[in-house]
Image (cartoon, rainbow, N blue to C red; front, top):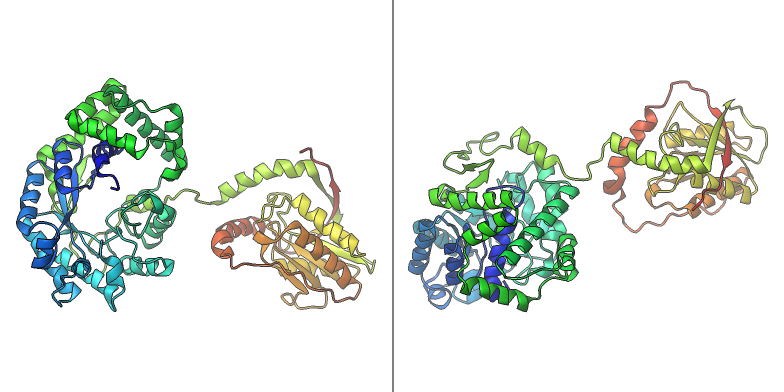
Length: 579
């Protein structure tokens, strides 16, 4: 952490926060090793990390103690039921200047063997600290994968690396993750911090708070257990409020501070520190010093939680303290799930070919797939119902019987889709269908045309909507428009997909574009060749943003089609809607 004196306050906040929502969350508070050990002995942490191991003698002497001191430290942690994971990573010796002209993989292999000899449960390798320099070397990314494989062979809990952003390129970030996903890695990385890049004063991780939603989608798409379970936004907000209230109660009960309502509210809704009005680093340092000097322990925190009514959180935190007595979670790859320690001992990952090793259970697969903002047809329909009330106030579409072929040479027929104004009430860009029709009619009239509106029920396809409308128009020119906003200008003599103008980018098509569409259709009706309307695109990934909704909307449209159905004449009237 940037201010080491804040370590104790950070540890208390972590242990209280980890007790909210469920029991059995293991956590660490990485700081200077002697201080981290004291914090662990006080019971605040269940995990220790960043215990560095290097691959050359000079790096040990000049860098960070010796293998013997690290082994003693590992024993001290284990004696108190604290899980420990070492840190190495190819490139560290290179950064320190003591590489002995050896390969990165050779040096890292030595580190991993030392860690295995120490008796630690795992390793945070994968080029964690040295990943940026390793990634600059030809084959460096493959070396990172190789050292992870060695860790697995040595039966070390393997953190494949998220604690260093090796590049600013989003493509290369994805390229580093992809091989692990394709290879079926149990975990994509060692952990996921929900903090934003600017709050990581040591070094932004490969994946940060900004990429949280992307990470959840990667888990779902590749069926990889990245360790995160999606929850709804309301649930997340409830947990954050509860956690902030819990830590505030502990501070007040132990006379460490009295956070104001404004401070707490700012933290609950913040994405990063710049959005908070909480304690300053200096104020946190004084709270931290008070915790250390008064020898406050985890038992004091548990009593404070219970005394202030946070009984569930007190029980959850006590449960983790009890686990330290048994030491069951000191095993390799141990996690606590549903009150049971699961590790490489009682749940071995025996890979002997495709279909073996760790496999997502149906329950876990469903949990990973449950990302928020899931879109289904019922969601679309409920969202459309909200717009329906608005449209009903501003638009009336009254059926007038079967539509016939017009005789006015200036007539332009607007052929609307089956669900237009019946079940679907806005375009993909959010334009209500009443405003959409107004714009089309206005444009046709300004272009010297005569508009007529019909509903087509035999098809929902844009091209055939336009062609069918054109065949009904006295001018032989028609407009086909789907409720989602995709539109064409068509002529009765042209092939179905050989239209006069196509407006395919409905999400970025504006009312002005639709008005110009109507205008051009009227000019086509009078035998002119107007300048085509251009809907400018800036490289937006419209398919990825909208295709799921499009598929659901189109299913609604096609569900209303009837083979051989006659076109229906519509009488259109608009009402002014009060703002």
